[in-house]
Image 1 (spheres, rainbow, N blue to C red):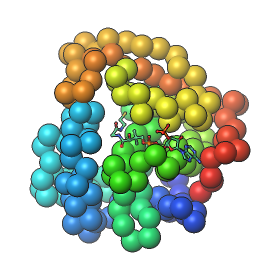
Image 2 (image 1 turned 120 degrees about the vertical axis):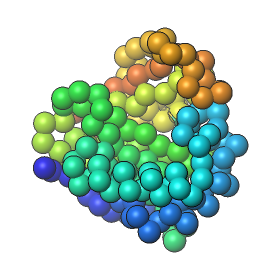
Image 3 (image 1 turned 45 degrees about the horizontal axis):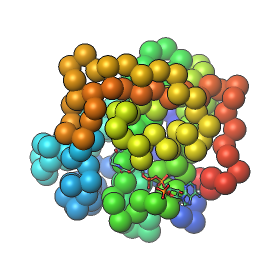
Length: 190
Ligand SMILES: CC(C)(COP(=O)(O)OP(=O)(O)OC[C@H]1O[C@@H](n2cnc3c(N)ncnc32)[C@H](O)[C@@H]1OP(=O)(O)O)[C@@H](O)C(=O)NCCC(=O)NCCS
């Protein structure tokens, strides 16, 4: 099973595969980001060390299985967020997810990370589309695929309604195809 690079680095940030011994650093980053994450990330409501350790263990197994590729976003030695590529949108597709510690927003880092993951995704055999999904109320998340030239392809009411308190319950899907992908010149590369 083909897998993306385990580590991608620039002057600004590094993406590196999560390690099971990142539990303290990740737990601290989530704890400090909780108010910022709770409106949008359903898992944030269950935050705690055990939950964090479970995420890291699942991420390790999913990477080995070639199903999900979850990365720490770091600056120096500090964990400042998380992102990943997920095989959960059917054959030929990968979905990108991301979050940042609020201290590190507003600098283009999520956009840079998503650009790097898009490039990694299209380097894998058989991948012809990369998508970003978010709730319609999450305008900060929407701005990431928009900046990268993804196309909004649909808005669908979530059958079970909002899954986090900030959500409107309408899922928005953005897509990039392999033949259209070219990273915008203004986005630093990893
Ligand atoms: C979604 C989230 C990661 C977006 O973070 P963000 O900081 O807005 O996104 P970026 O890191 O790409 O930064 C973009 C900002 O940096 C600015 N910027 C500076 N240099 C930039 C560059 N080289 N490239 C792109 N943007 C740049 C942009 O203008 C933008 O500023 P603005 O918000 O004032 O318009 C963040 O809001 C978050 O963690 N939210 C909570 C979790 C969440 O909702 N995750 C997504 C679930 S679907």
